[in-house]
Image (cartoon, rainbow, N blue to C red; front, side, top):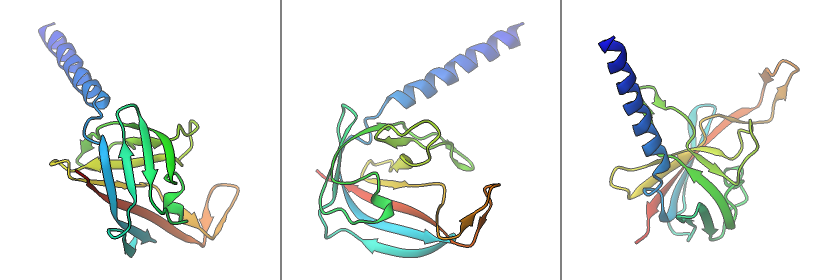
Length: 166
C-alpha cells in the first residue's frame, strides 16, 4: 500500500512540474532578430542564408501577441511569419533522450490536425538565442498516391536562428 501511495504522490509531483513548466512562457518573451536560416533538402544541409544584416524582428509579447517586422522574404519558411501581428502559444520544451517530445510553438491558431502552424522552438539556457524549425518534411514536387505514398519530389526542412535584442 505504501508503494502505491508513494507512486501516486510522485506522479502528482511530476504532473504538477510539467504543468508548471508548460504555463511559464517567460523565456521567449522579448524581441528577437533573425540572423540565419538553414534549409535541408533530402536530409542534407542544402543552404544557409545569413539574415544578420537584415532587420527582421520577432517581438514575442506577454499577451500571446507576436509582432513580425522587417522585409520578409517570399519563401515557404516564412508562410506563418509574414510582417504584422500574429497570435502565438509557446510551451517550454520537454527534452527526451530522443529529442524534443512535441512541437511547442503554434502560430495563428491552426486547425486541429494541421501540421502547418506548429513548430519546434528552443531557447538557449542563457536566453540569448532561439532555434525554431519544423520537425516534419515539406515535400516539393513528386506525386502522392491514394495510400499517401510519395513518389519523387524533394523533402525540405528548415531552422531559423535568432539572437535576443536588448
